[in-house]
Length: 197
Image 1: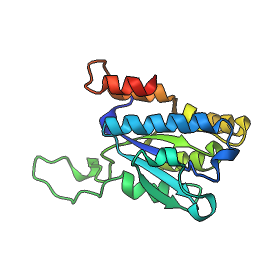
Image 2 (image 1 turned 90 degrees about the horizontal axis):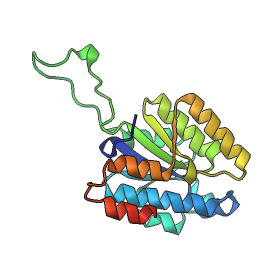
Image 3 (image 1 turned 120 degrees about the vertical axis):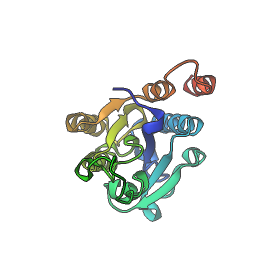
Image 4 (image 1 turned 30 degrees about the horizontal axis):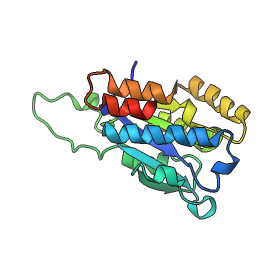
């Protein structure tokens, strides 16, 4: 199964000013998150940034503010509930005609874009809990490992193990970019290639 740009949404979790200096290899994670945000912008993939307790942890780091993603503030470690109403379009009203699919087969609340590409920190706390919450809400979750971090490698890696076991797909920034593009004939291929390299 490959990612589809027109079925995807990007969520960048808690890359905040007070938090990032304590993160293992935080600069690399932010650089990859920035690439993801830029590629999402080029390919018209909706993007969201969460901020955990911004009064205490500060705003999103400046580099990622330029992405232009919608900021969602939260106090819970699991950001899925703060995001759910934004990621999922409003339910369609019941109705139809004789040719309509029977109501018991309709998924009125199915998201238009059911794949959530997720990256952030700390991988073993907010990212993990948000991913598990989104899986529970029946989204397909793709975790971008090279754009995730924690204070320690062990915590980060434990999060990846648990996420994979829970059904999240583990991917990298370049995997996302090239799966969204699909082909070198895509009109934005050269722009994306420039960002990746």
